[in-house]
Picture 1 (tube, rainbow, N blue to C red):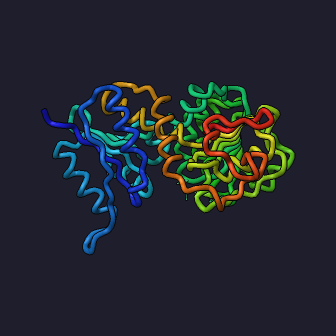
Picture 2: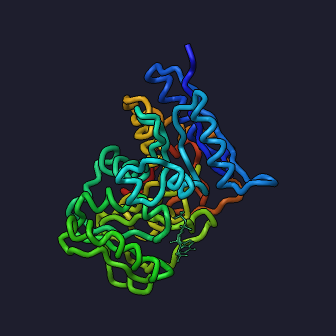
Picture 3: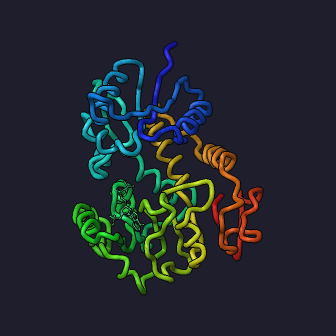
Amino acid sequence: MVTDRYAVVGNPIAHSKSPFIHQQFAQQLQQNLSYETLLIEQSVNETAEQVFKRVLTSLFKQNFKGFNITVPYKQVAFEFAQIKTPRAQLAGAVNTLYLNEQQQIVGDNTDGCGLVRDLTERYQRRITGRSVLILGAGGAVRGVLEPLLALSPSRCVIVNRSLLKAQELAQQFDVLAQQYLPTKQLEAIEYSQLNGQLFDLVINGTSASLQGSLPPLPEQLFTPNGWAYDMMYSAYPTPFMQWALLHEAARALDGLGMLVEQAAEAFYLWRGMRPNTDVVLEAVRALLRNNAPVLENIEFPPEIGGYQGRPEPTRFGDWEHKGRCIDY
Ligand code: ATR
């Protein structure tokens, strides 16, 4: 029997957790498939975009059945797809490719669905009727706006360093805002305008965590049961999660659950089966933690870092402090 092949495409790609996640799904559902990483980079004669299109076209003609796409090729994949699903069109980016029955290349985007599933199903966090603040106005945010708006939060605000980018995004999603928001408007503001405003859910969609930095946030940002969600993840709490817990967030989550959920949705598109994601999230969390550097030189504030400013790794799975907890 021929093994169906899948791959995640990006640059860099060696760090990707997607092969591990999809292999877990396949094992769980007894699917005979392989899932690899595929590094695409420019060559002497071709741009990276040209290499991407040439290589994927050729692999689809072999026994590759689908691809996940990550940084920096989500827009290239969007152009490459012959058919784009409505959610890919809204996101302006594609993270999942596959062939339909007519052998056309379909581009979809499962990122937003992944975020919403993680929050509303795994953590049972209600978004409908609650106020939502989104930090950032780049591709990551664009990808999650539609499913967030579709849940009808009481208001939805985008804050960005470049106000113009936030305003453009708000403009692009205006029809959906009018349809779903009681305020009829997706608000776009600068960080200085956050003073005095509190939110039930604050989602960090900036790439600031990647540089270990934080957007300029005010001292008070969360309602009494306000949650923080970082679309980034790492073996240890991200700078935004640390900041949120020090600023009275009731809970701070990272984006590892979103990663697993977007993968599960892609798996469903490819195989028509939904894996149990809780066990896979646990496994990928353990993998991250086991491969993490020892925390000797990392300073955590005592409020979130546990013992003497250093977390005790054995307690990271379920650590609570003053009624605030961090999911690790
Ligand atoms: P991605 O595809 O990951 O969203 P992107 O499109 O480059 O990447 O967008 C990055 C986002 O993070 C932008 O909203 C950016 O803000 P600007 O548009 O004002 O540049 C935001 N960002 C990056 N670093 C940041 C920082 N240190 N503080 C605040 N926002 C930051």
